[in-house]
Image (cartoon, rainbow, N blue to C red; front, top):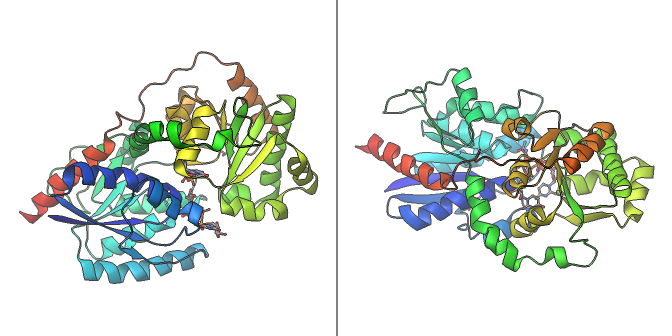
Length: 386
Ligand code: UD1
Ligand code: UDP
C-alpha cells in the first residue's frame, strides 16, 4: 500500500483534489492510502468547506489553519506545520497541485525530507516572475520527482527548462519523470456537468437575467490591489453592460469583495452599485459556478481555472491579465488577452460577440487524467519499494 499525503489549501486545489480522490476511491483504494493536509490558506465556508461537501472530497486528516498573511509568513507557517506531519507520517510521496503558496510549502518541505514530490499541473508558465504563482510553480517543478502537465505547452516548457523526455526509472528528484496527461479539471467538468444542470438553482434566482448574462471573476493580486487596474476593469465591465444591454454576473473572491470600495474609483463604484446590469455575488459553490459557465454568453476573467472551464463549456473568454499560461485558448481564437485595459476589453467583447467560427479541439485530454496519474503513482512508487 502506497501512503500518499495530499497537500491543498486554496479553492482551485480542493477542486483539483476532488478528481484524484475520486479516482483513488473508484479504482485504487487497495493500492493508495491518501491522507489530506489542508493548510488553511482558504478558510471561509464558501472558499473551502463548500467544496469538500459538494464534491465529496474526504475530510482533511490535518488542518494547519494558517489563515491569511504576507507570502513569507503564510508560507513559513505552512512549512513549519507540514514538516511535523511529514516526519510523523513518513509518506511514500507528497502530492500537490498548481501554483499557490500551499503548493510551494509542500514542495519545499517534502523535498528537504527526501520525500518524492508529485506535481499535478506542472510546466505551466506565464513568463512573468512578478506573479507569485510563477515563482511557486517553478520551484515546485524543479524539486518534483513526477511532473504531470495538463497541456502540450506545459510539457514543452519543461523540456525547455532541461527536463528529459526519456528519463529512465527509478525516478528521483535528480532524475524526474515528466508526463503530458491532460487536465484533471476537465475530468471534473465532465463529472459534475449533470449535477450542475439538475441541482443548481442559482441562475433562476431573482435578479439574474438567466438568458442574457456574461460571467465575470476577478481575484489576481495585481488587479485587486491596484486601484487603477481595478477601476479600469470595472469601468470596462460597466460600459459593456450598458452599451450591449447585457448583465454582468460577478461572484466575488473575498479578496476582491474586501477591496472593492477602497480601491475602486468612487464614480465607478457608485455606478455599479446602482446598476441592475451589474450583479455582485459572494463566491459561489462549484456546481453553481459551472452552471453559470454553462449558461452565460461570455466569460471575462483573470482566473486560470475559469478560463479553461469556459472553454470546456464552449464559451468565449476575455482574459483580464497581460498574459496566460493557457496559450492554446488564445492561439485557437477562443480567448483574447486584454489585460486591465478598458479599450482592449471592450474591443475583445465586440470581436468575440461577432465571431461564429469557434472550434474546440481536445486540448485538455480525454477526461481521464486522474486515472492516468493514479496509475503512474502506483507504478512508480511501488517500484521504488521493490
Ligand atoms: C490564492 C493563490 C492564487 C489562486 C487563488 C485561488 C497564492 C500566492 N495565490 O490567491 O494563485 O489563484 O488563491 O482563489 O497562493 N481571504 C478571505 N477568506 C478566505 C481566503 C482568503 O477573506 O477564505 C482573503 C484574505 O483577505 C486574504 C486574501 O483573500 O488576505 C488573499 O488570500 P490568499 O490565500 O493570500 O491569496 P488569494 O488571492 O486567494
Ligand atoms: N470557482 C468557484 N466559485 C467561484 C469562483 C470560482 O467554484 O465563485 C471555481 C471555478 O469554477 C474553478 C476554480 O474555482 O474551478 C478556479 O479558482 P480560482 O479562480 O479561485 O483560482 P485560479 O484557477 O485562478 O488559481
